[in-house]
Structures are given as C-alpha cells and as structure tokens.
Image 1 (tube, helix red, strand yellow):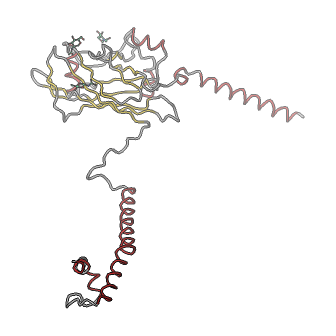
Image 2 (cartoon, rainbow, N blue to C red):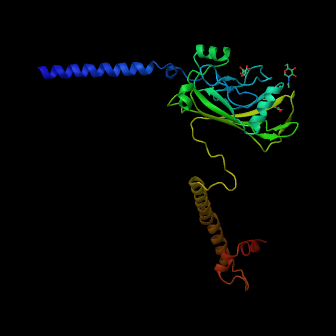
Image 3 (tube, rainbow, N blue to C red):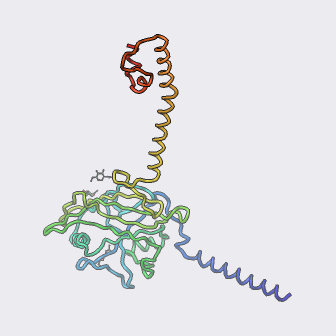
Amino acid sequence: MPSSRLSLVLRLVVAFYTCLAAAAQTQEPLIAQPGYKVGQPIPVSCLNRTIDTGEHITDESGQLSYVPAFTCNETGRPLELYFGIEKEINCTIDFIDDPFFHLLEFYVHNDAPLTCRIPTKPLPPAVLKDEFEKGSQDLTEGQGSLSDVYTPLIVALTGTLQLSHLHVSTSLNVLVHAVPKSVAPGTIAAATAYSISREPPSRIVIGDPLPLRFSVRWYPNTALPSGWTGIGGHLTFSTFVYCALSALASAAICVTYFRGVELPRRLRSHGKDRLGGIERGGLGAGGLGGYGIPNGYGYGKRD
Ligand SMILES: *[C@@H]1O[C@H](CO)[C@@H](O)[C@H](O)[C@H]1NC(C)=O
Ligand SMILES: *[C@@H]1O[C@H](CO)[C@@H](O)[C@H](O)[C@H]1NC(C)=O
Ligand SMILES: *[C@@H]1O[C@H](CO)[C@@H](O)[C@H](O)[C@H]1NC(C)=O
C-alpha cells in the first residue's frame, strides 16, 4: 500500500535527523569533557591589566587576555584550588614589584576588579598547553559570560590607599559551588572570593611580600546553606517540634513516676499512719494536707 510505504519513509527520515542531531550534540568538545575528580587541581587565571589605567588587555584578535594567577611562594606555582577540598591555602606573593603595586592600588581603590576565572571542567590538554604557554588566548570570549568553558571568580580584594603605602585585607574567603553530582559530576557552577575586612590588614609597600590567606569552602549545589544558628536565628519548625516533644516526654515521665512510685509510697505510709493511730496534731488534719506539702509529712514521721 502506498500510504504505509510513505509513513515508513517518513519514519526513516525522522530517525535519521534525530540521529544526526544527537551526533552533532556530542561533537561539542567540552560537553564530552569529563569532570574534575575530587582533589584535582584547578588552575586560576586572572585578567591582565595595564598598569597606567588598570584597563583590561586584549590580544590582537580582540580577546581578553587572562594570564596564570600570581605565583605563590609556598608552592612555586600559580594559585590553584582543589576540586571538593576545603582547606586553608597560604599564597604569599614573594615580592611586590612596581607594576603589581599599581595594580593593587586599582583593586583596593575599586578602579578595577581583580577578575579571575577557573575552568568549569578540566581543559583538554591542547587548550591547557596553549593557555599556559602563550599566556592565554580566550577561545570562547565571543560567547561572553554565557561561555561555559570558564566560570568567573571575581576576587573582591579590599583595603585602603595611603599616601606612601597600602593596607590590604589579605585574609580571604573563597566559595565554590559545584553542579549537583546527579546532573553533571565534577563541574563547577559558580565561584567567588572576598576579603574579610574585619581582620587587621597587611601594610604593603613596594618590595614587600603579600601574604594572601585563602579559606576555601565547597558547596555541592548552588544553594547557600543557612549558617546562622545562634541567638537571633529563626525558629525553625523542627526546633519547635523538638521542644514540644521534649515537653511532652518530661510530662509523661513525671506522671509515670508519681503514679508508679510516689503515689503508692504515700498511700502505704498513710495506711501505716492509720494503723499505728499516730496523732498528727493540727497541721495535717486530713490526708489531703500530707499530699499537698511534700516532705512535710512523710519525712517528719520517719525521724
Ligand atoms: C600583561 O600585559 C603586559 C602589557 O601588555 C605584558 O607586558 C605582560 O607580559 C602581560 N603579563 C603576562 C603575565 O603575560
Ligand atoms: C598559613 O600562615 C599562617 C601564618 O600567617 C600560619 O599560622 C598557618 O599555619 C599557615 N597555614 C598553612 C596551611 O600553611
Ligand atoms: C620565598 O621562597 C624563597 C625560597 O624558598 C625564600 O628564600 C623566601 O624567603 C620566601 N619569601 C617569603 C616572603 O616567604
């Protein structure tokens, strides 16, 4: 029949296109790129800026130029994070030269942000090599912030500008969110870093070392857990339920104790009283008075 043959052809065409679309999707190199393993180093690179104006530097093709982050004296390597590892990282910049001092002035004076980025997933070896040898060409900058090759890591470095020197808050928190493991394992979702301005700043002049102290924390999704549990924190439903249950439990224990231990004891001693025919004077004329005043009756009799 012609109609059934036509539907067969249609179905074949649809199947062909579905297959083609699937193939085209898997061809995107970084989608197929495996994620980070726990503990795998993540290189940090930062935007290169001119020292006269703090403006970002672009290469000949107009791409923003990211260069490996400052070298840490502790490791002899540019700053690295480690996937899923919460730790304190000391990264001392050995010697602040004149150009870097000027850049620090731009950062703490809010003329330019310290704009860094980390690869969302490990970069393929070719790009990695290119990145670190040629001093970085951003292959995907055309996609702007929608690029999923890198995740921005803006470092909000704070401090104050003095006439002859700088005060820089060198203790920083670094927060990194991963995409939930069930969605895309080993993938970074968001990151940020900020100075803790409350801590005493480091006084910096040209030629000094800059002792940066990073506290790195990781989150398994993009939600920030509530960290506020002290006084003034909100009363959660579970706290309320906990309090109500413990009140009920203590009431139950009291009733059980009174019924099972205290009441029979009092009844017994009351009975003995009766049998012994002890005169109780004016104080506890009835049995009721004895129950109402603890210690008053029971103990007095034993003494
Ligand atoms: C940053 O840009 C300046 C000026 O173009 C250049 O001299 C310097 O080598 C660049 N920094 C790095 C680490 O490539
Ligand atoms: C980092 O440096 C501080 C002193 O500034 C030191 O007390 C601390 O032990 C160091 N931490 C690590 C992990 O090296
Ligand atoms: C940096 O490391 C070198 C060699 O390990 C050492 O001589 C120098 O004192 C260190 N500088 C700082 C600021 O720790």
